[in-house]
Amino acid sequence: MSLLQRFCRTVLYKRMHWRAEISVEFPEKYILCLAPHTSNWDFIMGLLYSRAENLKINFLMKKEWFFWPLGAFFRSIGGIPVYRGKHTSMTDALAETARNTPKFRLCVTPEGTRSLNPDWKKGFYFIALKANIPILLYGLDFERKLIECKHVLVPTGDVEADMKLIKTYYKDFKGKKPEHFTVGDI
Image (cartoon, rainbow, N blue to C red; front, top):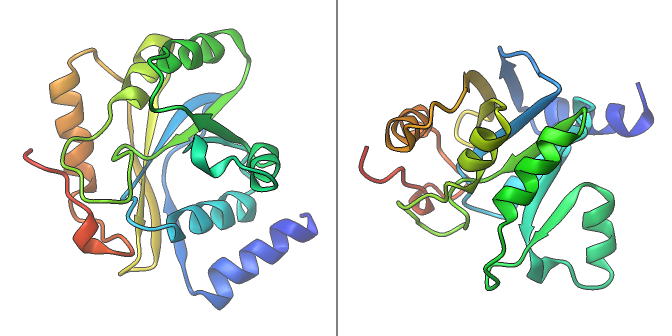
């Protein structure tokens, strides 16, 4: 175990008193869907958890965070900038990367914002569908100090039904700012 891993485990589990309940296997390729996303603390918790568990995973983040010197830092830890204003086919490009590489691990927050948003983004779903890879549903619950993953979803192509399953899974998780989280109508 590396010094960084030991440090992150100590901070997350012993000092902050969080726990992880993960009952799914990690395949070589997957989308990690992380919700709720209500605060910048979610990023810190995700970073601590991934380093504590020695998970090497990329993540999407709005391009505005990739200014000097933070841009180099975020890229070095797996950050991929998202250019929201441009109409690029990022889902197609990421799905192609997932199909053509032996390992693909990407963390996405489905709300796409830290603000209240009942209309979740579906890009993560379409990446998984096009690449034929599973979606690991990770919940971050600040009230229970719990990081949980007990469900894997393989996209069926029925977007509405699958998104209903995904939102139902997350409905009871409490974010850092619970008033900023909703699963909308399910």
